[in-house]
Image (cartoon, rainbow, N blue to C red; front, side, top):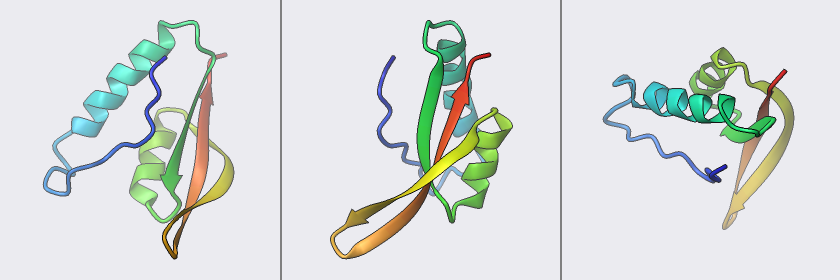
Length: 83
């Protein structure tokens, strides 16, 4: 399964459904693969993104921080598991 380290959303296109199209493709790949889990991280302040992933069945499994220089960002770790 490919490793998607980072998803960048272009600020000019927040409502153009590109994220949904990409996620639909990822979920199709996941559901037709032998993989049992998907994990991702999302800024915990990005409520819109958290809700987006929850609509696909992702649940919060933890929290972590990521630092760039002196700036620290708080993230939720989300996961989905095949039943």
